[in-house]
Length: 248
Image (cartoon, rainbow, N blue to C red):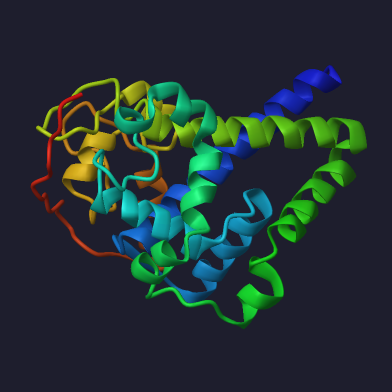
């Protein structure tokens, strides 16, 4: 296989894996408490988050909970209805970083996730985790292919994460009268996150597919973890809540 093609395939596959880790651990488990993981499984996901994204969980959780508290109104850290589609799709890392480094956001929305010794020693050091991940790629693929695959992974992951907010609040179906939208095609490449109207309708549901014909690939991993005794789902049936609607 040509080295460039190998790097593209490995990089995108890693982005998909990182998106799976994000939706199962950061999103469904930590941010919304839609499920709980056994301690060993949670530590594994924490480690995978560190080496594939460098994200600090309490920062991600705080930013996401703030997004739900101020969905598409003043205070939302990354709304395309407020910031513009391109500003979110292309500049989401900047918007995220701005909110993640706001001490008031962390104090209000991540009070249940205080830092611990492992954070201080390992997980608060993003470049250390990313360095380990990139180093492993270089050892497995050679430094040139490894670095290229790491670049493809980073770009793909950031663009997919941004699309969940940019596309998911601007384009697609609105089966329920709230500002977020469903895109099944986006759900396929974001492990279920493209069913965004559903998620905002039932934020504490571990399953994002709510209607016939909808597919949430992330739910397959959730069910696998549950059946193996590594996870417990909070609600057997989705619990919906009303949400504000603003003009697009």
